[in-house]
Amino acid sequence: MGTKSSRLQGFYQLNPFERLQMVKSFDGLVDEDLRALHGGHGGALTIERADKMIENVIGTYNLPLGIATNFRINGRDYLIPMVVEEPSIVAGASYAARMVRDGGGFETSSTEPLMIGQVQLVNVRDPDQARQTILSRKEEILALANAQSRSLVSLGGGARDVEVRFFPTSPMGPMLVVHLIIDCRDAMGANAVNTMAEAVAPLLAEMTGGKVYLRILSNLTDRRLARARCVVPAASLARDGLSGEEVVEGILWAYAFAAVDPYRAATHNKGIMNGIDPVLVATGNDWRAVEAGAHAYASRNGHYTSLSHWERDAQGDLVGTLEMPLAVGIVGGATKVHPTAQAALKLLGVRSAAELAEVCVAAGLANNLAAMRALACEGIQQGHMSLHARQIAMAAGASGTLVDEVARRMVAERNIKLARAEEIIAELEGRTIGNPTHN
Image (cartoon, rainbow, N blue to C red):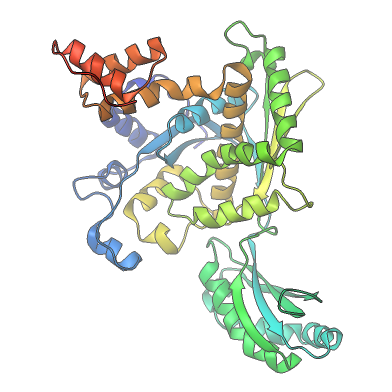
């Protein structure tokens, strides 16, 4: 594994089929895997399988699947599959990973995969006594919870602890909330957590004399964290007449903006999730749950702020860290139903949910770096411009080599609009059009 390199020079210049063949040679994929990654021709999600996944199915919906290159994480090289519709994300991740590679790559770690199941109790007459009763009978509660998932327990997971929280006021009155702390191993864990919470609810009601309402997992998975750190040599950041020191300075001011201003922090953190969500989608994970946990975690100290932290070290190099909740799985759910998710996991070669979480957090830190470097150097629009121009060219009816020529002309003119694309197409095809009606 250590001999493989994700530094695939010229990868972006290949056509999709050539890229697929290079990806195959990286990680020993078979033709069936390639069909699943490629989509089309029956290789991706069938309508029959989709019909079993959600309700009222009438079809499937395709998104681009790209490969982020250059990633080295804990000394190992990865090609990272990303499913996303927004231009610049895959390129940004790959470019940032190349700069981080100059500093030795990403260092990552993670905590145990602990999830929280919540049971809400109301009309509890003596909350203090109820809390004491629950905690004194903790082993009984844990045993009942673990009886619901003997397979999880056999793998070393299961319910580990019980906590009790009291809210003296709420819009409806006081409530007691019991937390089950559950080790979910390589699963995301939603089904197991919810099943255990449901199972212990009647026992908790009996112990406290209260009435149970909600019994459900929390997506603020602050016991299940993933962390990434990178060092970017200042010299690797130099470009377009800007010294590395100047770029580091600009990036640190961009970070400082997000650290103090929630309006900026929301967009800054969205840039982090630009790197994480596409990996979650590619691997069949619940990106909405991770989003919810990330933004809640960003507010954990009473105000919304940057999830990442950036500083300059004694050598003048840029150092970035990111810690956040990341509840992901490599077993169960869509990861075992969707053929493309299975192929994406095989391409990644991750051996645990923790490793997948660490890949995700590295991708998030990479995209954060790419966005801040772009903003500090030339503004985000320039990075988006050529891909956006291609989309506009195709919307105007261009195809084949005409797409690139129309896009090139619009970017050079800095006039990327549908009406201008139609004019250029007409000019290149030697025909005339009337007054444009599009803006």
